[in-house]
Amino acid sequence: MKRSLSFRQWSIFLTLFALISVFTLHLYGKTHQDARFRAFAQSFFLEEVQANPIHLHYTIDDPAAYGIDESSLTLPIYQAGSAAEEIYALSRTREALKGINPNALQEKNRRLYELLDSYLAAASDVAAYPYFSEPLSPSSGVPSELPILFAEYRLDDIPDVENYLGILEQIPAYFDGLILYEQEKAAAGLFMSDTTADRMIAQCGALLDADTLAEGSHFLETTFSDRLQRLVDQGILTSDKASAYIAQHQRLLTTLVVPAYDRLADALTLLKGEGGELCGLADQENGRDYYLALLRLRTGSYRNISDIKRLLAEDLKLNYESLVALLRQNPALQSMIMQTPALLPEMSPEEVLNDLREEIGTSYPAIPKGRDNTPIHSTIKYVDESLAAYSAPAFYMTPPIDNICENLICLNPKDTGDDLSLYTTLAHEGYPGHLYQTVYSKRYQEQEGSLPLGSVLYYGGYVEGWAMYVELASYDRATALAVREHPEAALYYQVCRLDRQFRLGLYSLLDVAIHYDGLSLEEVALLCRGLGITDSEALSSLYTYIAEEPCNYLKYYLGYLEIMELKKQAAVLWSDTGRMSATYDNTDFLYRFHSFLLQNGPADYRTLARRLAIN
Image (cartoon, rainbow, N blue to C red; front, side, top):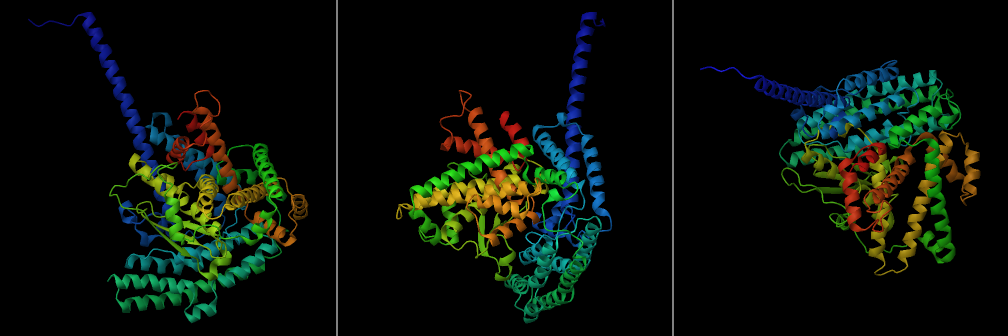
């Protein structure tokens, strides 16, 4: 006989049905939100990497695997008024992102959401001041950056060669866009000073010298020929085809690229006088507001300006007093500083890098294994002599996200002449610096199944702060190597480190003073004289560099100080007493702290502090 369910049974059934329905809807909601975010993040990533074919080539080794036709991409040629449109584009992206509920995302996606949201907010704040940006800075602008990127452009096959030559053909239009932007800057009253314009004009003529190109001895010609020869040796190119490419390359350089540089120099000459005297951003209308926005984006520090000044000033005072006291107690150190003695064992750059690599696995975690366990290779080379005057002391060429095993470090011979500079520079650029941090982060994200979005969000304060942090730590390792034969190295290297910190701290504080407080060259010189710095020519060069490159020193040194503040925070949080642990800086603590930084970065320091608090 068929029996109907009792009231109690119906109640239990309905309750279970409701619970299952709620759980199903909740699970669907989370899955749906994750799918939406992953699609959004992938779309944002693809849009960013395809915006510039040069940057794409350095970011992705196999674009086809991402559905990208590299040959179809063009350089981002500036159009009239488009600088003012960036804020609108960013606001639309932020609105689209806010349509996704971060609380419904998986942990790894929620963290990436928070990073993207924070990054877009900071970028929007900077974009609100469209004509303060300077793509033609003498130290880091497009004209000096392009030759380096062209000289190191990977040529693995014939399509790479064709794409590279195609980019050269676009340089005239690209430079015309730069000229248009500078004309708009001038109309907005924000054109560069005549001092800066003169340096840029001279640079345009020096970087692509027509006589050197005619002789076939320009570094762009020789490096291109060398890369083609490797393709010939591999059987990818015939000798005849390589010769044809070399002739085409030389023709493009002389008939398109050199005239583009000349036209840029002519345009800057005509615009001279439109800008004011060389000064900081504080002297411009809205300059302070722009500086604060730029500082946040470039350094990842969310401290207010008074807190940043305090942090820098306290560090400067400590290093200055320690340095003065050490020199007074050991007068012989003065002559050692002038002589820069070689105290380290004689080592090639490759041997130095191998020595530094031995630290990995002790106080620094080992790099996670890749999918195919491919070993990490590194190549060290010196920049061409013709670029030395415009190049940084050294730089690390970040490898593509899908091929991180081949790494390149470029050294500037004029800045790494003594053994200690070479050692600390390779610590900064190699192990445990940029190379190690980059490969570790990519391998860790690969293991976690993270989206590649982070590779297009640049956190300069984290990246350079980490490199500065490990560079300063490398003085201790250098000391351990040198004192075996030279006991005097202990004090000498201590002085060298204190001097390095003092100068970087001073330059960072001057960055704030010039761009936020409006200090003039004369006021900067007066301040520095009180610290024993009296070389007027050096001070003028320093003022010029800081005025032209706002936040650059802060990216390095404030980034370093933020890491040190996180380190103190970790020592308190991870202790049993709620106070800074007595084991602060021992190997186990350092291993844990470095693992936290590497696994949670790159990121801004507000985000890192939040994650540390719940770690």
